[in-house]
Image: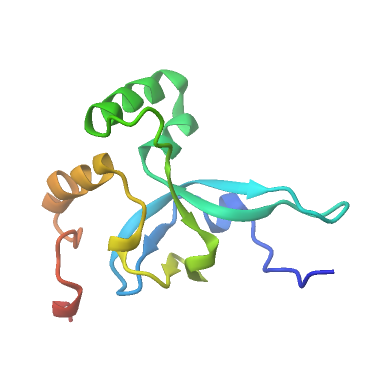
Length: 138
């Protein structure tokens, strides 16, 4: 029998939380979650990945909106089906008011579209800290 992990209410403790890299820089938001079935009989599902980005978020709204977002993503990222960006629970350091990771944001599987949105839209919002050197922060 394996040692059980921490029990969380996904909608309350994880969805829509900010994700911070090892330097404390906000780099994503939890848009959806990926689970696998437990190997034990009557076991609860096991959270394996945090899904970030518009590909994961789109289906929480409507299929109509998701089609438009998917079309925009394909213009920026021509792969047939790159899928949403996933962050393995293996790199999660702490779950609190935000999700802290053990890796730098540059190591995350962020798509070209997400990076473009971050650099060209979010970076112009005061206080976003996008593009800020984490070593220069006070």
